[in-house]
Image (tube, rainbow over the protein chains, first blue to last red):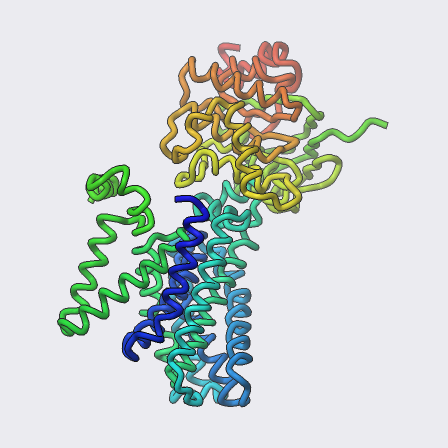
Length: 316
Length: 246
């Protein structure tokens, strides 16, 4: 595919998604909003997890901070939504810098564990803050406008995807990939590893916080447990890994496909939905550990052997 | 007034707990010179390279690069100044193509300005050609075997356009034919006019490449001088083979 064709295809897809609210049912629009937000979160995780290779469990904190930043600004200080969103992003970036500098020194499992622990800490802190409504949470002003939320979510996802596209073709992105592939070698070749890791973490934070802010205003109610929900972080990881970590469109496709499967299953066979969802994920990890993006790239060359080769390569 | 040497090591020591890995080492390296660093296993050769490249910090002593102390700089800053290195246990970027492995050297390294990816890949292409790796450009780096990996390691370091290249046992694990191939590759590198500090076990290699030799034993430098003279020195033979042979 030529670059121009890809560009046209991308614009067409974005336009198609943008016109969806004018002919889709309200239920489908709501499904669309949550899928777009999940895709944005997955894309954010892709920057720190997929490109930089740091398996972060801290991205749900960014989401929570974005939600709370927006809610506090709107409810406690009566500021407009836009200002609240910016406040949420700011909180998230500060958190990424303050926490990232010490925590990003840890590698592999230790980084994952440290970020995992942070989400527990955040729930405890927010539950005790008067301004955040303690345990009961905050109720945001009601706005009936799913179309607006849909378009906003789409815009944020586009922004996140364009950012990742830029990353994948830039010096910055190559620095991140070098860190993922071998951090010591990256440093010895002149990559400012500390700075790059913190920037990647903060950038992931920006998009997660934007998604959190939009989600809070859309749902109109947040509380500490749901805002800092770890299972959301797990979803981001699954969707990114399913779609193809370190690719531009992988996380988006992963989010769309998995949200679709999960939604269909839960309407058809509600009680068994989670079980089937689990099976899909296990199968994906075994047969296509590098995600859909890699599958689409290489399937044409290798055919069905692609799956058996993956199984063999990972000695399963 | 003569300009300062490119690299000057002053009274450098590194202690790991009770072990003195590098003990009061002093030497300097002129621009364009190739210095061979030899010594038995555990003599402190790799530690010395790690001290110069910035992976570890010295206990005492100083390292001057172009007349300026660099001992407190982090590894990446030293790379920016122009110190490139290879690793004894090679560290390619396994999942990236051979071309992009080298392109990262061109994107970072001593390059001051942010350059476009395309420019970096063009530069990488040239290094691949020099190192006889062009036909592997699109392969993943972890698909390369023995001598090709060593040449990739050289190409990566050279793409940084360093002033000083530290080679840590590039020949380890190669057979005679492959060693000759890689020697030719290193000669090409040396002919670009940069300074090289080369650690090697294979005496034949070090003889053919170095202008000068430095021998380390138990972390201390025991002899320094022209290759022929140094290798005939009884202290060197003793360090390698034991007292009776000397």
